[in-house]
Image (cartoon, rainbow, N blue to C red; front, side, top):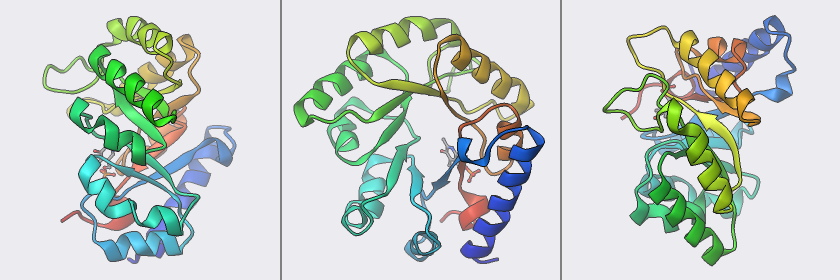
Length: 219
Ligand SMILES: *Cc1c(COP(=O)(O)O)cnc(C)c1O
């Protein structure tokens, strides 16, 4: 299957999932996860007209996107991987949406750098919905205080993101994240990957992050 075929197939599935959930297609964004993909495949995605991409490492994202930014001014780039405070400067230079905010120290660094650069990317808070010790994300019970802190520091927090535990049914976590977003008045909900994006749409995802199903296996 070519990247074009994959896009066509996934678009059809998204439309179907929206219809089944009584949702309008335009309420769901497909974030094409281009990490560790060959340049040729990324170029194919641009040629079919896709403009929204996700990356999980800041440096690699620069390699993929810094130059293309000029050629494709309508790109929308999401950071979906962990962010270290020493990469905050670069992250704000490049990304339109930072999905992985999970601690006050990172909020502080982002707030400072946003002011410096005069930029305010959209911010999502990553929630560790399964409270897994090794996983990034704020614990659900600490979400309200981190949210309040980020708002106080002037971040434009518009959403939540999660990566469910691999061994549990993802629907449980999608439903939970949707509930947390509703309770906190946040409209963006980033959840669902290649194996479960249709389910995520059923549970209210606004952004699904799809990599291998669009581009094929990673290097
Ligand atoms: C890699 C990655 C994805 C995409 O995973 P696929 O299974 O290839 O669709 C989605 N979200 C995050 C946070 C990722 O790191």
